[in-house]
Every structure is written in C-alpha cells, then in structure tokens.
Length: 351
Ligand code: PHE
Image (cartoon, rainbow, N blue to C red; front, side, top):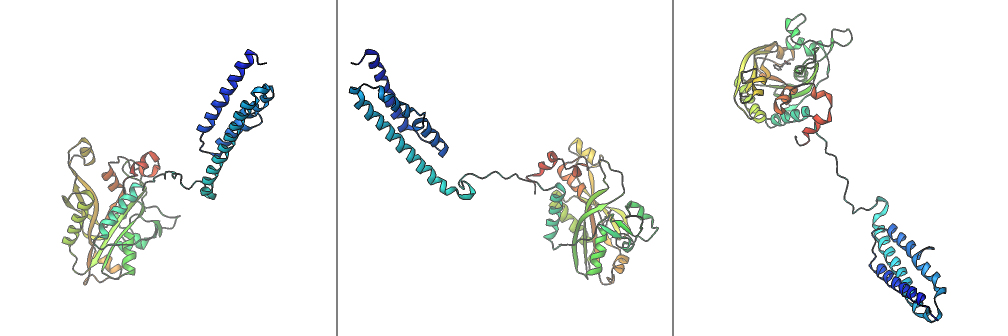
C-alpha cells in the first residue's frame, strides 16, 4: 500500500526526472572539459542519475515500471548527449593539431616606431634620391687627413677650433669625425666625377651637453661634382629640397665661411612668426638656419685628385637633430638619446 507521504515523494521524483530530461536535451558545450563535467554531474558515481537509480529499490513494486522506464530514458538520453558532444568537440580538436586552434584570431602585433632621427634621415635621402643622389658612408673614427687636412684645414689652422675634437687615446692623428665632410674626401679619392652622393652619419664634438647641443649628433652631407656646376645649381637644389621637406621655398643664403667651400653660405628658411614659439625658435627674426653649403674649394678637389679646371661642384651639410627638432617641434636635443618610450612612441605613425 502506498502511503500518502510516499505518493507525494514519488510524484516529486517523476517531476525531477522529467526536469532532468529537459535539462539534458537543452545542454550544449563548447569544450571537452564542459562535457566531462556534465557527464560527471549526471552519470558519475555521485551523479544525479546514479542516485536516482540507487533510490530505485525504495520504489514500491507497482511503481517500479513507470519509474524505471523514465529513468532509463533519462540515462540513455544523457549517454547519447555526452557521446554526441564528445564527437563534435573531438572533431574540432583535430583541426587544432600541434599549433592549437588555427582559426583563433591572432595576437595583435605591437607596432614599433622609427626613431625621429631615422625618419628625418629617410626623408632627406628620399628627396635627394629622386634627383639622382646615391649614398656613401665612411668611418666614425677618422684620421687627420680626411677630417681636416684634405678639407683645407691644415695643422694649426684656426678654423679647426670651430669643431672641438675628440681624439682617440693620445694620438693626434686619430679622432672621432667632427663632421660628415670627411666622407666627401673619401668618396672623391675613390671615384671620378660625375659624383652625386649623400652621406648620412653620426658625428662627434667635444661640446657641453645642453638643450641645444650634444656631443654626439647626426649630419647629412651632400656632394655634387660634375662639369659646369654653378652656384645657381646649388641654389635650385636647395629650393627643391626645402620645398620638399619644409613646404617652403622662401630661403635666403647668408655669406659664411667654411675652409672647404668657396664661396660659402648658410641657408635660412623662412619659418614665420605666427606663434610665441616661432619667436623663441627664430630669436624673433622669423628665419631659421638649416644648413651650411658652398662651392667645393678647388684645393679640396686637387687634394682628392680631381682636376678643378675640368670639374666643379657644391657641397652642403645639415644637422639631423636640428631638422627633427624643427619638423616635430622638439624643444630639447637630449630627448633623442634618452630612449624614453613615451617620447619615441609618438612617432609610431610617422614614416
Ligand atoms: N661640415 C660643415 C659643418 O659641420 C657643414 C658643411 C658641409 C658646410 C658641406 C659646407 C659644405 O659645420
């Protein structure tokens, strides 16, 4: 005889099995781990279905059939579900292989940035390569001939003081080059005209470090030697260059002095006086000096075995830090060497 209490209990068990059947039918999984957890929760030693089976022996005989059928239905459904999900997920496992899931989106690449000095160097090289300039390089540790003497700066020449020199050990003949003009000499010694080269490189001067000057910096030298090269050619080249880099063709040439060029000039561009910063940068004049230049002194050509009766040419030299400071409004030259990522990563999108 079924007691009232048992009857209530039995109905609740039937309901529970039906609820579990629904739960099993609705279950989905996205990993083999999830399927395994599901299997343990239902079919494991202490799983819900196992427990329901354990209760079976308490079920009165007359209810055993209904209870048993439903329970078996639940067990089969659960087993089938586990099998199906395992099959699905191990199927996708095969596409993983040794590399893992190759359909997963990749890790984003960290985008680096070129150093502003490299950016400016590349720009200048690009502009001059369009008018036929190639590249030439020389050593950073130089001898006296290439850095000074061949460039018309013999020993005791007062203009040597324009560039305070780092000597290597105590040998006065070995030094860190004070300018890239030394590469002019090396290139002319090894090549006959026509010559059209740029020489970017690091130079060294024994100067106190401040916001405006550093003991290590970069220059780009230009050299053009051919028949009938005149000062007008130099001027047109400079106009082309300033237009391409600074977007202005408003330039002026101030007479200057370099021992290796005659005549010599310093090139200013018109920067403008629109803002307070413009006043500061241009010292209130609106003009900014960007490079030194001139016609190569005939004596320098002779020193390099080039006949000045046949050939003439011009040279120019500019400081890359100065150019970068102007182009990117950088106020302190030391920032180029601090390697502060907060500074450097601002150039990520520049090229
Ligand atoms: N070498 C010079 C300097 O460092 C620049 C220069 C180069 C001037 C070529 C004239 C011609 O100051």
